[in-house]
Length: 129
Image (cartoon, rainbow, N blue to C red; front, side, top):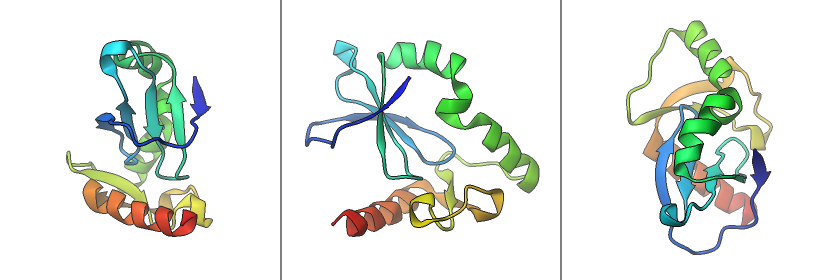
């Protein structure tokens, strides 16, 4: 299912979606049935998901929905907060797990997804600099 990806090369990617935690799903070449890349904001890692965009939606998300989208954690967060998300929002960590933040409801808040990735990108660039 998920495999850690080698460092990103400077090739064009098409981002086609993101989940409630702001993790981005992309593909390099949808016409060739290329694999899906998952950019995980919690760790700064990139993972390969085998298959094309169609098998991702029709098989991967159906069979491994909790792994791919953290469905159970979303239900837990929503039950605890009573909040819903707008299209441009995601749930972010106050202190990201890659900075020793806890993977707990109390460490989460709603953020604009563009602001979220801007901040996370800057932090990851400084750390990896």
